[in-house]
Length: 237
Image 1 (cartoon, helix red, strand yellow):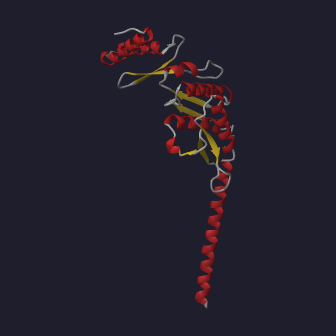
Image 2 (cartoon, rainbow, N blue to C red):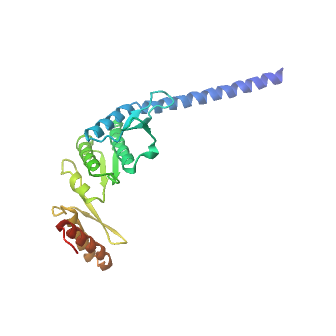
Image 3 (cartoon, rainbow, N blue to C red):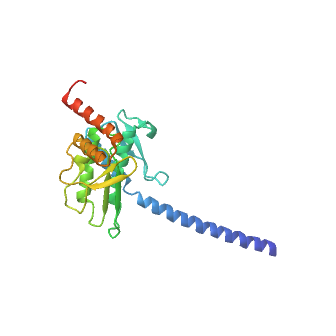
């Protein structure tokens, strides 16, 4: 009986430990669920924005709000059928991720802690229509959602995107051009004489490579300049 009593006490202790562990996990789960309370709102924002751009390839459909699938959504195609995420193009996945990221930043409520937001070539794999959508949303976010303590960094290799998205000074900011000579990258502040077209950018890169004494790398820039001029002037080589 004494041995059984010891076993019973040990079993009760193990049970109570498991109950405490379960209660802690349950609290963590509930905290995560609370963080997803705006998922449906974000999905609706994305759908409305895409609809206004006459984009009808798909829409986001929020999954029934249960504990098992809280914060999840699925893709409904233009034909009314559910599309697997693996069937979306790279550009479609990219625009969903981009918009979801920007809209999710609105849920960050800790105003005392500065935010550092970095967008690295967000327009990759997207056509002109989606690029203009991104340009508008970035400008709206930059001018209305950032505080003076926040940091916003946008990296792009797309000249057209850069020329349209850059914003004149309401906030402390700067535009910088990164030049590579094949081994090192030089960072130069953009001045008033910055390039205004892709053609102008090619000439600035050519001058930079000449000044760095890199004739081999100049050949590629020369080729691009000639191709751009020939295509623009509709000339035959």
